[in-house]
Amino acid sequence: MIQRKAQFSAFIAIAVAPQLIALEGPKSLPTLYIDAQQTANSQPVATYESPVSNLEFEPRVDLQSRNMAESQGDVSIRGGIFEGTGFRVGSATLIDPQTGHYFAELPIAPEMLERPQVLTGTDNALYGFNSTAGTISYSWSGIADGGSLTAGAGDHDLNFQRIHHALTGPIGESGDWSWGVEAEFSRSESDGTIRGGDHDFDRTTGRVQILGPASQTDFFVGYQAKFFGWPGMYTAERFANPTAQTLPPEYENLKTRLFVINHRQNYGDGNFVELTATHRRHTDKYLLDATDYTPFPFEFVADHETKATSAGFSGFHRLDPAMAINYGGQITSDEIASTSLEEGDFTSRTYTKLTLLPEYQLKLSGEQSLTVRIGASLDDSNRDDSEISLISDITWERVN
Image (tube, helix red, strand yellow):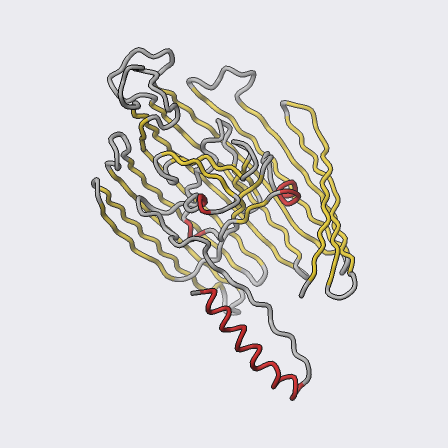
């Protein structure tokens, strides 16, 4: 429907253009922007929507889900490897110092985020943090008045409810500044389509936003609890009982708390600076076998708790029509407490990244341009030596 509307609008513009040219001289048509979803269904049918929902339909992303995408999903940029993809919100990449299985645990209502960008290559080197393959980057949306109420039921005792509401208002009499508040609560439960495939989810999120003529500040808090299972969810083996005819059910009980402060300031001709501070606490209780089988070489239950605090920034500044500077950076401190993952040399770390990427644009004949970007990134950690990496690319663009 959106594509048809776009084609119809373009046709009208072309039809009217000759008359405008005859009366007033040449005119340039305005740039046409289309904001369209890439999938037929924007919401899952088995639970409430999460930021990870529908990433399996993104052609550049490989999502290995267990039970369903909203339960647990390992996300990888296609061509990369496991734990090489980061999730960026604002200017900070959210890290989980466990095994990479929980990078996508973002207790954020989808209405609070813009559609994600998939950053690879030089863009990932510029904005990514500890992400070797790519970064899935979200920006904070503007709050709009309104809300929604959702309720549903289905087979296998499926039932879910969701309420979302937002309010905005002016600050002062000038009308240049405004405030917004937004809250959401979602829950879902089901016995599952197979034995051992049940789930019980709930999520509570809230946000306060201050919007200025060229700035946006967001204060966010979110909490999510998820209990879910699936036979052979991680192991896909009959470890506990090799003679069993079915895979043993495995269960996880996850709790995620997230606090974010984000400020973006626009200035000049496309210039901006964005600052982000986050704190994330994630707990995980994993049950390897929920049956009565007892012989097993490892512990049945594993408890993990991870904490990560980050501060990040990014920006763009144009020096003149031909030259500009891209920059970004982040510092993260994390730690893990675990019943089974503390066999290494350390359980905490602090690491930093700073990136400077100047760019130069050369105008060619006609509507062609050549953009050269070359810079460097500095990575430092209290657990290893510092490293400097070269970043560069060349882009040729032609406007028809």
